[in-house]
Amino acid sequence: MATTHLLHASLLPLQGGINFRDQGGRTALDGRKVKPGLLLRAGSLDRLTVDDCQYLSQMPLTHIIDYRDSDEVKLKPDVIWQGVQYDNVPANPLTDDVNANFAKLSDESLAKFDAVDFMSRLYNQLPFDNRAYRHLTQVIQQPESGALVQHCAVGKDRTGIGSALVLLTLGADRDTVIEDYMLTETTLASFRDEMMAHLAIHLNEQHGIDSLSYVMSAKEAFIGTALKAIDRRYGNTDNWLEQEFGLTAEKRAKIQDKYLES
Image (cartoon, rainbow, N blue to C red; front, side):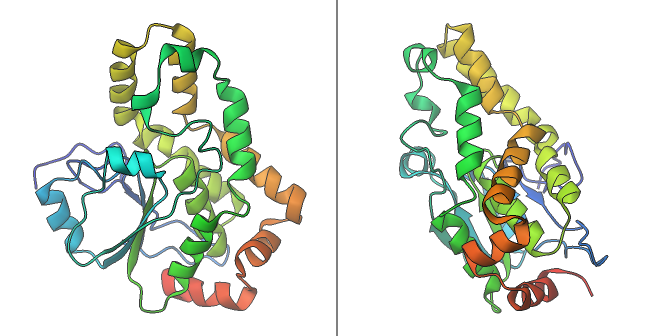
């Protein structure tokens, strides 16, 4: 594989990866660390090269969970390598408003788009009654499953909540969850710059460009909105994990033994 410049050590050395990184090394409250190479998060996999697939096939990857809407998948289908199970389970609760299918965007549609309101509504709704994350929790409970990559378009919002769910299940504290989320501001930077430059050619209204720049950013306020929404509804994240996903303390202990170093 050709040498790939990495913006952070957690990024996999892939030529066509988008924000494709390993959550290994994150620390749980009991001091154990997440095993490397088992819990991965990413953006779309449509740009993976043959060499990338060869690299990924050497890992114990058994599952891909794609959180994108069907039109996003149709426009940019994942490149799938042999030996991995692919599941498309959309996670976007606001699919009727907007998704990451930027081909549908125009100056007219963006003129009325309130990015701040959209991101607030998105993060207030993502954690609840979401079958995509129920599917995620079922996969991580399977004793025979290997490594997992969960992804959406850029690996930030839908993947961000899924990744937070996994870390909380493993016993990570909120600071660790927020740190992992905010790392995307760094690891997505090159792709975000490429995407914004492309969109700027096709869009004339500065409001639309500014709105998309805001949506493409990773802000602590975004993940904070989701955590506050969970606290309002359930009191704490432990209750959320148990009541939304059936992740009792006993089930979480088994998951922790699977994904945390001894």
